[in-house]
Length: 247
Image (cartoon, helix red, strand yellow):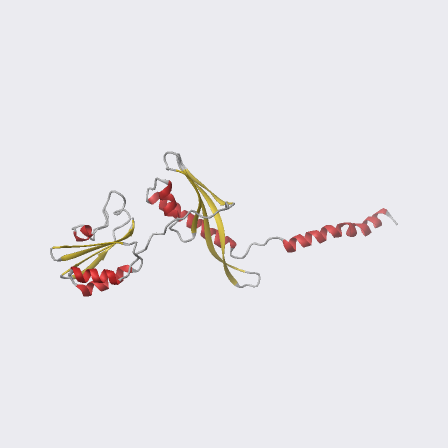
């Protein structure tokens, strides 16, 4: 048999195991689900919001960073190091669950979640972060969730409209809302007007006042509620600043 003929005969035999191994690898390779990319993008958007909150609220201590990050429902704080932004710097490792949708091989829309971890380095000289790092083992840092006043505005306004400027009636109305016990409630009376202040967190404040002309509600802006600015109090609800927009 000629050498070329022999090679032509033996080559397929020699390469057959390689082709078989390659086929098996291809069949068994890890395949990312159809929703993977969208879910990772969703997790990344969540971390962007967390960082924006840090900057907007001018946070400083590790405790503040952890508390703010833990208010996002999809975020768990796995690690925290450091004490303050400007002195030691603060490093957080966050585990974020992202939700996504995609189209599978059969043309069907499918949904799912992906867990992604991020490392945020905050100060002392600059902030940066690492995306999609290996998630460390261990339980998350316990972070108490703030109560919320979402959906309370209209309920409070309607109920106060039937109470009138009567302190006892207003107190009964507020009690009837059955708010989270962690929501701070303050009620005061001045010159025939009843003022109400409900505060769930630093920036979640709902004010109301009830006078002879009816009930009004107002939410001070985020800037107005910053430390050193307006206080979420019944006194503010009764003052001339009630309802004023920030300048």
